[in-house]
Image (cartoon, rainbow, N blue to C red; front, side, top):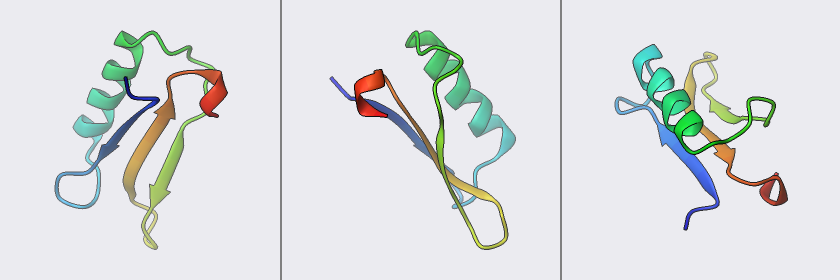
Length: 59
């Protein structure tokens, strides 16, 4: 079983729809809303990848 949920942008930079799908997947997995999200951003400030730990042990 994965310990994190990770998503990257299909075309390098993530779109709003891709981010929304990530949030939906995380909520379905039962991750609490106060869990920190890790993001990798480009030099221009665009989101390239996001991930969240499924359990507090992985933070």
